[in-house]
Amino acid sequence: MPTSLDDDAEDVRAASGGDVPAFERLYRRHVGRVRGVICRLLGAVGASRADDLVQEAFVRAWTRLDGFRHDARFSTWLHRLAVNTALMDLRAACCRPQAGVVDLDDDDWVGWVEEQPGLRLDLEQAVAKLPARARAILVLHDIEQWQHREIAAELDIAVGTSKAQLHRARSLLRRHLED
Amino acid sequence: MNEMELHRRLRGLAVDQPPSRDLWPGIQQRLPARQRRRVPTWPAAVAAALLLATGLLWWQPLQSPDAETSLGGPDLAVAETVADVEDAAETLLLAWTELLEFERKEPEWVLAGVDRPGGVERYAAARELDASLAQLAAALRVEPDSQLIRRLLHQTLRQRIALSQDRLSA
Image (cartoon, rainbow over all chains, first blue to last red; front, side, top):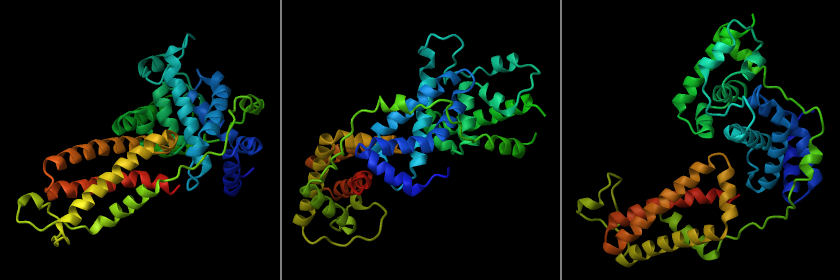
């Protein structure tokens, strides 16, 4: 169903005043895109948390509707909030007891390469298996079309670091993709 | 695979991924009650002071051979009276004080702005400008006749107001 900007604006105003059905319409209109970006950021290890984080993102959106300026697209605002929700979860991953969880500061390129010698992956699988920070940068830049300065601000890294990590992520992907 | 092909294929991954089950019930039960948020009323005295502050864009300090007044800008005209200059500085400081008081009373309004894109940076910039304004106010008490300090005060307050004005018009 195509998104109607007018419908969004009207439902956001109504939801700001406590109209829950209006917020439900916003949810149903945007949940697919929100979940898509969250899944891509979480990758293979965090996939089981995607639905929880989708719910978390929409609850945060409800509480922050007053901060939404109507001169911007609601979908863009919601998308950024979803990204932030997923990245916060990745940062907190180090505190969870599950084995094998990698956090946003994990930069284990060597380990990743060694695990997959010669294994041919499709593109989506390959992206999902990247180290957490590299995956976040690649997803945000090459899939979600963010600028490096926006990525750097969100991840609290230098623009140069974002560019370098993107370059390495792309190189790694090319080596492990199926033809 | 070349760079262009990789980029094309990555861009193709930007697809929606709807959940396999309806997540709405879980969201709905977590939604806190909302009330129509009161739009904070900008105090009339602050509004008047801010109008004066922004209207002083063309304010010209007293012409002086003193090198302290030279900032490499355009040629300076003579102000109406010394009293005008002093009153303007007091008005600027009053506007800043009332702006701070307003933001102190409306923390949710301030935090809502932080959540917007670039909001963190604007918030940090506002805090830096407040520190500068405090220093300028202190310097003006020591050197009340300094045109340089008054001009810096004016310029700094203009920037500080600009950071808040977009929220005022929201």
